[in-house]
Length: 469
Image 1: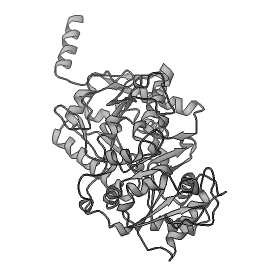
Image 2 (image 1 turned 135 degrees about the horizontal axis):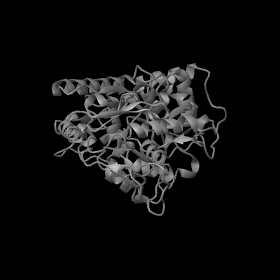
Image 3 (image 1 turned 180 degrees about the vertical axis):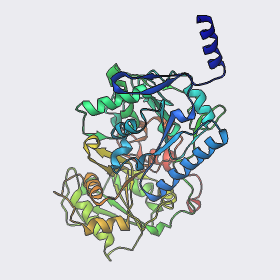
Image 4 (image 1 turned 90 degrees about the horizontal axis):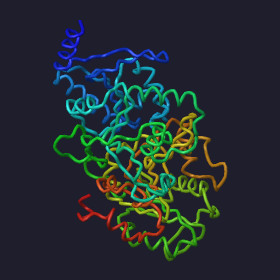
């Protein structure tokens, strides 16, 4: 009778047993449970193909599975994103969602993304997820917001930038199964834009929000970056300790400049970070002994600079300069911490083909390519430069965008574009202060409406003696 059924269901809830029912709408079957268990969760680690990152994400996967075994409450599915398919553009998430849906959509209640250095307390994660009915659309994460309209977010919500929240991916973020289903259908049926992927976390939030038709981000206080009581996630660091920094002489620095900037931009480099370089050359359209600059015989162009960059690559491999494992190419208005870069480079094998920096994407929904954006600094191993110059890939014109051409070439050659969020294509004010204040940034770019020397001293100059870094 009704009373007995009510008592039975009440007892199931009291004992925290999963109460699930199938949903067959649109040919889709998932189990919408009142109580989420670990086997209802797919954890996607935003991993990368480079050997260092593949190893770190693999270690994180093992840690999660070992923790689940100790809990004895089931085992989540843990997916390394770079292993999901052969398509490198899966890092931008949207191309990966249909694959994740096809493989796990019939059984998963939640899809939870973390970065490779995100630590997860599974019991606390379950407590969080059980606050939100898995049969409804939910987008959960630690909320970031812009204090001012930002160029990297295309000045979205310029009238009130703080009104829109997007997830700090280092703290983890979650999609419920119904939302995953709807996003997959949109990706497969709509004629989506195939232009640039610049700031993944903001663009994902915009896509999910769908101009008000989808959910906004729900802020979850237990998704953390800084450790504190009650956190389900915490974040280690973007600047790992892999041993002693590489030597100054292992990094050759190439600064791209031109005559009209000799008097204002070059002095900033000399007043800030030049002193930390072992080998450094300035490449310009004219020779100026007072700096000194080197002319590569390539005329200056208003944009692009592909011809100049490929000339730098050829010079790097020549006997005209000291032999080094790494090449750093920067603009004359790039501010950079070379000690921090040297610390980061210890994690990478220069005998591998490595292209490192801030990763952007072009046309990734339509099988496009990734590239290291130039303003934040492009770091290439000698092996990567050798493979590139040994191929037939190159500039279609001297003023082609050098960073995009390099990305297209490396994609063709099967060289992964390795991302570090410590490189920045824009100024500190263009990023969430909450996010970058916890980083040990390696670079910023542009001198617009800022004092670049002050920016360097505040954000990039370490108080410790440089020899300790």
